[in-house]
Image 1 (cartoon, rainbow over the protein chains, first blue to last red):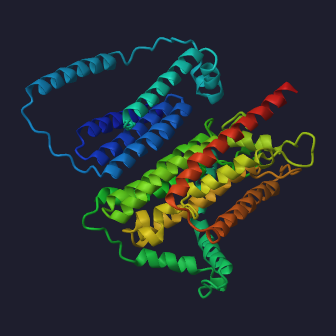
Image 2 (spheres, helix red, strand yellow; image 1 turned 90 degrees about the vertical axis):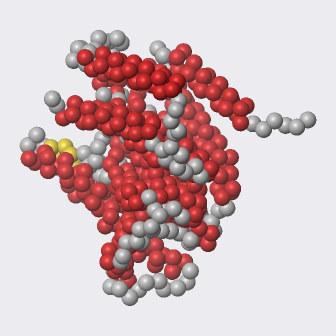
Image 3 (cartoon, rainbow over the protein chains, first blue to last red; image 1 turned 180 degrees about the vertical axis):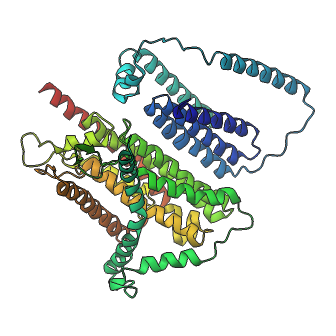
Length: 171
Length: 348
């Protein structure tokens, strides 16, 4: 086992652990902070997968911008401690357990297949992909349609949020 | 790798990280004496020659004072915040080349912490994490003034980060690389038509330089943008509840941030360690190249001090308006301008 693999596994474990902590956190601010740690650990995983560019974007966009905005809103509204969830919701408990079981099965399946060689889908050199220049060349040639489609989707989400949040003008 | 290789790696990485905390000592002296000079008074001049040791005396004082933790503070986060501030401040410099390539015994040693392909993006990532230091400090203190400072700061840093990265995108476009080594190499070429001027980005995209510098003031929370700690309204903003060396850590981080953002500005827009007609080969040349970077950075740092004691503080709505309605559109204009130049260069 190489040191790279060790760092990757450790970062992956931290990401999963803090992702889970975020779900159960009763304090909203602490929830956001655990998510920051999870995202940062994910960025470390990307670096270990030879994709420093994606790692940097992950930290800049998610940890550095979106989660700061979350914190900003939480602090502005001063949302503190949430009261503990009241029990006696059989339907939710049942659905939740089914979800956990399905997830556990998927996780087991993934872990069992982890030793197998991953089939090369693109046939590209992973080291060449790490270079930001070749990455952007891919974006603006082979994957241009996907790239533009995602940007239109994001724009639609933006406009949608604006429409929902806008105050109705009284006639 | 042999032992010598390991030593070289450790030295070239650790040296810049260790030198910045030491730089805070002369910098506070420059700041306080400079302020006094601008305000027509003397400033601290009792400790050591010209008051040079005042900062050391202050530091000893901070180390020996009691570190108070407020009773209702969130203790782990309260302690974590200054640590994040110091970490972010000291690790931003890693991708800045601080001198020409050193050649000893057939070895070529690049004077840079880590020459990664994402270059300047790494710095932006660390800077975007440094906002958590301020936000956490403000929130965990459980104090209204601290919280106000933290809220202001998170909005301010995000707003100016946009203008800053868009301005830097112009430089990246011109060099077609994120690597600061490539950006310096691009600036070492002579300018077309007027060959005696170096091709520094400040001459090609002066608008981008101004936007980047103004954003750097905002990102380091310096006057005229020091709204997060505006003392007439917020006592001391996010670090109101901090005392002793915990406060000192925030102070140190601020000064280190000033020096590092000046060094990055020098590298992006003022040619870094290079000078026109200067091609260092010997060890002496490399030392001179480090000094060139230091002098250029020192000049910019003095501009930071100068501006701090000259301009009044912005109001919060003015700050936001400047960021979103002036700097960001101008940064986009700058980007278009650089793109047009590059198109013309490719067509030629």
